[in-house]
Image 1 (spheres, each protein chain N blue to C red):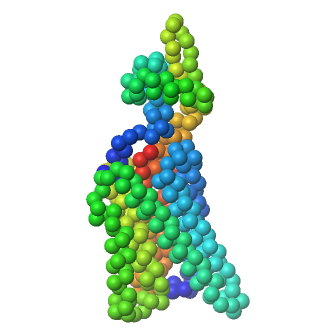
Image 2 (cartoon, rainbow over the protein chains, first blue to last red):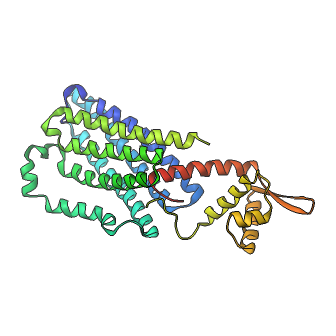
Length: 225
Length: 96
């Protein structure tokens, strides 16, 4: 990986904690769907279930990667784990965006530009490969394209949750907004990792704090009767 | 913005509105109070009350020729669970 040597293993541990939190959120969303039978809640469930599966696979692959390295093995495992994690994240965030878009379609209150934001993201990305990616140079080492895709997806969700907070001023909405904001920042730092290994560490810490923020919301929501 | 309610209430939302009116009335509500509180027509109210009685979340008592509706323990637990789901969905900006 591109992080400092002393950090090897800690990233997997952090992802394992995030996996448990994502799983708890997926479970709460499933309970919500069972009661309400509302599709948006089902998408929320699938989104976090996929995210938790990806986090579990990547963290286990990371642990196994550490072991195989100790046994003079290869780092193929960690690459496979990351690839699965990336695909799971794309599907998970895509599912959440679909939930927001389908709700927006029902309520017809958000502007068209916001509804098309994910599309703009992909268009920007399509225009980018080639000269722009070459300009990034060393960034290619740490999956810049995949992290840029994820950044766009999470950014869209961050904007939606931010709009929700600005409309409701609710503390739970603030925690969700903060959670996705930290996740977006973590992807930004992963892109910039070649500029300094410490950014990889900070990125992972922000990712964990993002999930902790979502956990705080979950505890508040389920704890108050 | 995101929290604006949809144009039409879902069936689940109507059930919950009825149960909340009963709860607001100190768990002892007359049909007319529920009718106004949940904003329903008389026929639809009777239909929904019957359905809620069937699933056992409310019960009907008769006191001095008055019909009164109360939440059962199951109904109270359901409302608590629904409240948690509502807050959870609302935190993400989804309206139930």
